[in-house]
Each structure stands twice: as structure tokens, then as C-alpha cells.
Length: 239
Image 1 (spheres, rainbow, N blue to C red):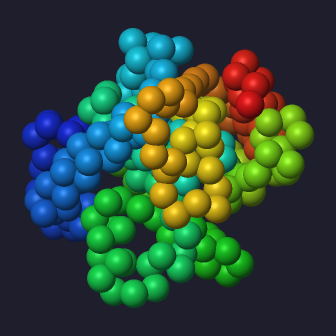
Image 2: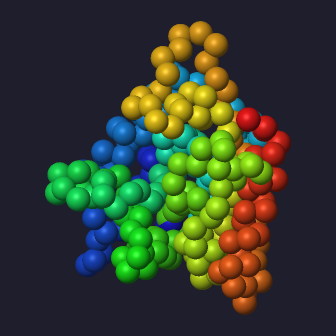
């Protein structure tokens, strides 16, 4: 995820096949959206990224950087954007396919570098798009469980992982597991907006660990290894 995109860096050199997310309006939109998202996160919670190297996730992610996250709250996307933006990167993330159904929202979401998370026959299209972005050195982020996971559905802290994470890892992505805990206290599943708290804001903790795989690893084994690492990281912040 040419050079990886930065918030304030020189834009990628023009090419005959310019990716729509490299267009000037899309880059300007992401800069504005990133500032708004970060302000929103800090307004409803305290963000603890102290466990990340220098509080950032931008460096040392590898040539084809894939962030694999857990998913407990609608706020998780905003947290990932905020910690990546702080390090000068914008993550291309998967979003529900039905969000792209209407043309206006489809244009907006694509400008924000979101990838339709299709299921069934359409699933490979999203993974191909992710691989193209990874080939360009862009940061791609994927919620490994593929949906919001309630507390009762994650007895060891993590729900069942979908197959996409293992496939991308087995196809050569440089995987960093990024776990988010505490976001569901700020924005619980089922609510249309975060809880308004002027005092005693909850703390959202972000942890990360880089993984490595053998060249011949299978998608199943890669996915299992990712899940093991994710369980270990979230276990440091029981909730």
C-alpha cells in the first residue's frame, strides 16, 4: 500500500492507469475525513497507542503491508484510521458490500479507499483489489472476523476468522496484527452513535505485532496463526 501514500507527502507520479483513489479530490477528501475522524475518536474516548513503537503503526510494516484487526465496535474503523493517519498513512479497508449499492455512496466510499467486502462468488473481487493495493505498497486493513463480534461470541477474546485474512497472508502480504480493546465501551454494537461522555471517557487500547510466515504456508494455517496472535494480544487487555 509506487511509494505508500502519506497524508502530506507528494502524490504518486501520474500514470496512464491512475487509480481513482490517487485523484486529487479523493486525496483531499481523505485528509479532511481523517482530521474529522481523529477528532471524533478523541472526543468520545482516550486513545492509548503507547504499546505501539513510538505510538505509530506507519513504520516497519513491510513491502505489502496488511493490518489485521479484531472487530468489537463500529468505532474500530475510526481507530484504525486515526492511528494510521498519525503515522502518515491512510488504510484501505474492507466495508460491507451493501454500503456500495447506491452511486453517491459508492463514489464516496471508493474515494475513501474502501473495498467492498463481498461474499460468495463476489468475494475474490475484493481480495484481488486488496492484492493490487498491497502490490502498490499501500496499507490495507481487514477485520479478520468479518463482522461485529459480541462478547458472548468471543469466549477467548476473538471470534471466528473469515477466510480472507489467511488467503492474503498466504499470498505474500506482510501481516501486522492490530488489536483494539475498549472501543465497544465508547460505541457499543447496536447503537447508532457513540455514547456521549463529557467525563470519564473510556480508554481504547491499540496493540500491534508483526508476523512472518513460511513461503509455502497454507491459508488455513496462516489464518490460525493470526488468530492465535490476536487472542494473545487482546488477552493483555481483558474486557
